[in-house]
Image (cartoon, rainbow, N blue to C red; front, side):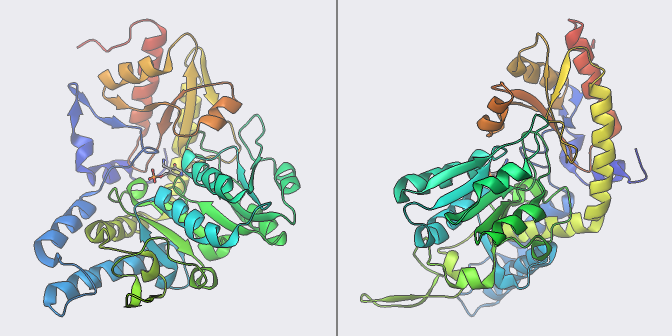
Length: 411
Ligand code: PMP
């Protein structure tokens, strides 16, 4: 569909030429992780061949190169999310660590017994468990905004949960299990009206739509590099200057201090205050290259193309007998979750793999939302700009064969 050249994008990703079980690889597991373009792979090699050093510490040439590359990557992240300053960008391992940082640093300082934290039914476990842990330590209460039968946040119900006790609201911008896009800007605005601080989980959003943290108005925003065509083990948490400056460190060690004596340590300013120890320098640089690559495609183009592909896929899959799509939000991005009458979800994942088609079958680290639909698992096909209508056709044909009782293509 469309004029966007997904086949050209596909050629930028060497792994997509891989064959599995003798078949062309059809990668439809992008919500678990995305593949890496040659530009990112090359940037990692270049770093290790020409720049590798620890950063900020030495007077030698390679330290300067590594430091420059790392800080340039931070600035690429700033530009990518339209943060006011690169000082708002903290490198972490991923969205999970970003959320834990907010819970442990901001949360420990600002949450007291009797306070309330509001999340939604759509959350990934990474945006549930850290708040539960904080609540059980601090004696605060976790409240959960419901969704309707399409998997959309019910804004009136969300607002009803907010009040003078609400200290923090944390919600996902896109559901990784159903694909629902939440009305994030409105939700932030409503939360701020009640005086709450807001964290937005952008892990499933950043590769699918333009993100502007200032437009969104969020106080915190987290995402993972590996879901946006970058390396694993690197991610970002954004925080506003005012809030970060007021936050205590969460880990102590080298790099995060201004001065240390045995009597007293004073801490560095953000973001270094939150980056104790030697960080994942190379992969931060790789993430910078991934964001450059994605910006080169254009997020608005990606968003438009994926929307067309999603519509095509939903249309195609709904013709498979007995297939039910779970999550029919009017605003969706990149994900089709489904079940097939009479077929076991886990087995379907295995049969599709035999055809070279990689999907996820399981609970997608979002058990509550699947249980909201009476399910323990779905099959999830999730899209990226390198997916084509041929990929969708391959999936649909395989599902037709599964339903017809002749699972694997004849050789
Ligand atoms: N939140 C959402 C919405 C996600 O999709 C994911 C990853 N699938 C996470 C958080 C956690 O990200 P990570 O495992 O990379 O830390």
